[in-house]
Length: 252
Image (tube, rainbow, N blue to C red):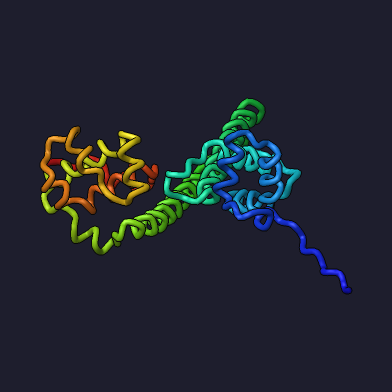
């Protein structure tokens, strides 16, 4: 009988756990799994770092080591309820660590040259430093745009779990500023209470009875603005920092 050809074992085929499930196990102390995940996602780390640096990065470079530290940090800091997948979160953490590293290197380079060169060279180094800073600022702005678009897409998909679309949300947004601000306060109250936040995430419904114990508005008001309150609460609960402007107080 002809023997079956064995398929290579990968981290995705070892079990039915999602990557997020594995990250949770790592946070509970599974260091062996941590090493497996780090080893498996080296290409991902190199890709993110190379994109930030705008050049090829391999495992021998300092930038790769910084990316590795960022990936490891992301595994420790990731929270399932924040509304994004782990790799999206890890991408963001790695980018920030690399940008911080570039900034630090730029400052050190400037200090070294200003201490060791003549005045005519000093001007050239200052110009080079300014150009490098402008490049970093431009890239940061691009990252912010990308992060906002990524969070909008994740938030959009999250809302579908509650049968809410952006179109429906725009139609259910309170028209008056004071009504919107009141709804935001209700949403913030919900998000600040873990039990109510958990109720919303699990049952996909507002815990209206519990909310009424903490807010001054009526049941009718909460029910009328239900979809808007849910959306705002999810921004708080999910930590959608790029959507923060949506929940900032407005001028009455």
